[in-house]
Length: 267
Length: 254
Ligand SMILES: Nc1ncnc2c1ncn2[C@@H]1O[C@H](COP(=O)(O)OP(=O)(O)OP(=O)(O)O)[C@@H](O)[C@H]1O
Ligand SMILES: [Mg+2]
Image (cartoon, rainbow over all chains, first blue to last red; front, side, top):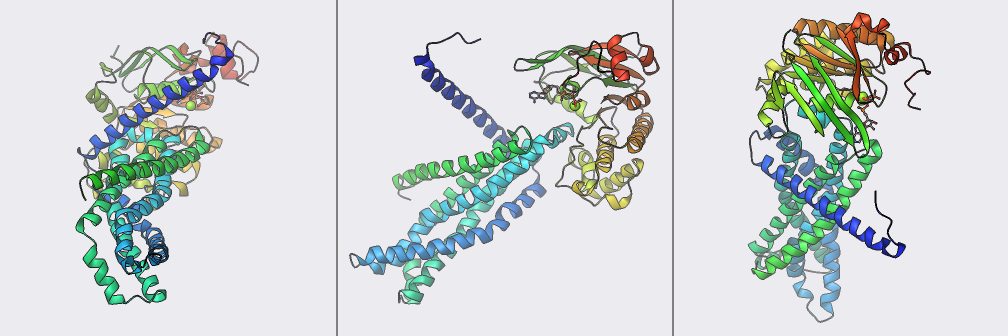
């Protein structure tokens, strides 16, 4: 039993308990991620599952990623036009649009859309499997859930998110192009030439690296919170919420870290 | 006396302050069938999960075929699982896979059987639990509870195990379907020559399935005897349970 402590020290106790909780949660998460990573590079690899997940995670996300990208590209072009015209720099619109899309908005927007669509989906699926004892059943059938469930999702997200982001880059730039040529009287050929001449392989590559990291975050958070869920339907709902929130926060955080790193190494 | 296939010795398990198992001991000989009865929440499912290594023990030992199971000895546990089948309380079928892949899961994923042969063997096993070929390509969500239990049974026996666990195979089924499941269990377990540990609080089912019956109460086995002796056990706890009386030494859970 806890010894009685004076009321004015209670807040300290709460802070301490919260801190300990955070530390042990971090420890559990790290152990989980470690095990998934080991499973992802050891045999047997379930190739069929990886392909299935690639279709589910990647292919079915194309519409939502494409749609957001075209609107973001279009809005970005308008904003840059307004901002640029304040000091007569509106002719740089294509350059800034392509830079903004490939380096930042493409990966972040696609990552966030997948945090909503994929992370929650994975958490709900794995969570339901947990509370209906399917994970236990898998284990008794001599199949590790780390290998059969989590590793294929990790692989699929790491493989498909960069592809999705590349598609988002192209569509986002196209959105900017449509607005610029359609309503802002830009010359189409010139727009494309400016874009192509300006963007570097490094801009695109950096964005794709970010995408791969975001893919890992989205799938790992979904799996982690899913397999942690307890207590029936409400537990599964909680797992889905936690997966979305934690992936979104981690995406923003790692985006900042990666951007810092890329600018330091001059990518 | 043959050596037991499965043996639990002095098993303890608590969840926080809640002590569930407190010195559980039982064993099953090869080919024999043990039924464990006990009230809701007495830790029957927990004792199966501990036996299978799905939960860690606080204290005690588990032996399978003479080998002690330990958390750090993966290969021994693998060897045990390869010879074990389990029917879960809620069937726990994989709802993303069609019925035949559920039944053939072990064959496909750990025994390396080709998909074509695995499907044939799955359909054969489904036949043994009286399910037709047309069920093979359905998904678990399209089946009734009784059919799901039968698919679960088929999955548990598909790889011809030496030991099968049944967690409440008949709960939630009408008496006729329940009896049919009991018959299937007896038929399949005897057919395979497997040992079985079944959990139930359904007395007709216990009498039918069990060679022996043991009663779990307060985290321990308080009585164990031949199935036919359960009606004159001389133990007041068992008597109360068998006759389903609210008054007696066992306090109802509500
Ligand atoms: N993962 C867990 N965490 C905390 N408590 C648990 C857990 N699993 C089981 N328990 C507790 O252990 C006790 C025994 O549970 P168990 O599922 O073994 O009951 P049971 O004997 O199978 O009951 P029933 O006949 O209703 O299935 C219950 O009080 C339950 O609350
Ligand atoms: Mg139970």
